[in-house]
Length: 298
Image (cartoon, rainbow, N blue to C red):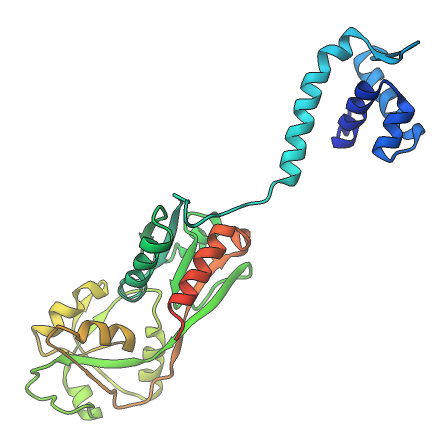
């Protein structure tokens, strides 16, 4: 039987329940001809009359008695599926969310988020990964739910929301022998050795563009793969490093690190959270997005 839908199942069940084509039509707000046409399709499909006129109305045949149970089960499943709406209760959920961010993001975002989860969503779990060239594909596939950082080039189909603005500053050892003031001069900047972090998902492309545009040169003394080594290397050497201000203020507390102004203006950049439109209405992802946005509101 082609094109079987919920209406067909409801017609069969209503005839079985009322023993009447006319009452079935009235109860379903259908014309008698429409109900009769659907019954004819069932009869043709099964090769059985299914319902026979008697003194007590349209009574089911044995085959109709046999299939009414599975029919009703199928009807209930279809109804439940059509009426299904996704639901998320943070207080009781044990869902594992995939988050993608840099190690800077982890220092800025995660302490606030984990404290909030402890109080409001104790069963919710987080699976953290680093921003990479695979981030866009992982968002599209659902492998990760949100990516936080500076992702400059995403194709159509991705949404983003600003979390906060940040700017770049310079950090040095608090006891650096040559850099004493609140700011560093351009000559000092170009004379000193620099620590460079080779990472993705941050706004450092803004720094590179500024240096190139202003013909500023820097002498790279150390290149490291992530920001985890910034604190120890800056605190124990005479290198300079350019880092986001929020990160700089965090690591300067309790460490032998001083924050200094750069000798040239660098545009601010926006830190965003990104997700794919496939999961834009997922209530769990909506809750997580709203939670992070609220926690990081300036």
